[in-house]
Length: 413
Image (cartoon, rainbow, N blue to C red; front, side, top):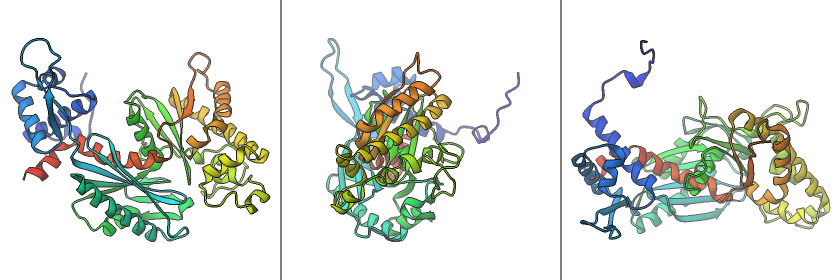
């Protein structure tokens, strides 16, 4: 049968430099996936590449500062113990930025995926323009870059986590909770940082949180939904270890799934969106007036406020129960479509898991077709509120791991 496949992948022959770039990425990914030190012999066995080729590629990765040699493994009983190879703890690093209800956050992750710095700064302008928010983020980013340099790290890129759909990893199309509409956040941040050598991108916070949780699980999670919320309610969906992005990169807007066709008006222009029933603002709306007047809601994040009041306010507990039911209905529909085995409550929802999990699980048990013989686990995410900013930093590292040849050319030329 003739091959009917078409596309750019078949338009040009593979050139020598393309093969080298591919194999460099292959070797680096194998070292990253192994977790512990791996020898050149192990790499040859795992990849099928000849040992002389492995040696040349490893030398290139060592020269680029992407991997490091560690002491020989003396546990082997016979012969000369091989030298191990691991990802470098110096060299390239990623910087993540995040916008929260009451603060801005910056995170540095080294090439091995370890968090080296996590910093928070109060939002000096609680209600401000998108441009001012970006300028404030650039200020804490510059401080983080200087700190990274002092640790022997080079920030090679910055990723900003935002709510709402993002076009071409730079333009935030619609994020009403922070007052952004069709705003080119990437270009503004690049200009504010003033560094032409550094890549700058913007991505959806829920997907970035899912990436961070996947890394934290040592890749044990393969098919899961990461329910993330602070300003907005979104879902990062991971299938077979890959983040589901969709045709335009806009998948995961769970907060705008309809739960009541004639329900409350949403900022998106529709009615009855999940956001209006399970978003933090909707839960906070149930806080009694006397609690608001007492100052119980001041100087705390929304999730902490809800948690503090849940134990003493039946109105807040009822709002949490309604939110859990609405979340369960929406998640059940999603699970019936994509077949995941785990739901992680992340971001601010990780702090409210005690009051949400039971209602979510009840709806999933009743509504997911396969739940009777394949239960879905619902639990608080391990990282929680910091997941998006850590995931943002990790995306920078992932880009270098996929294409190490670009970094090597830059460092050795």
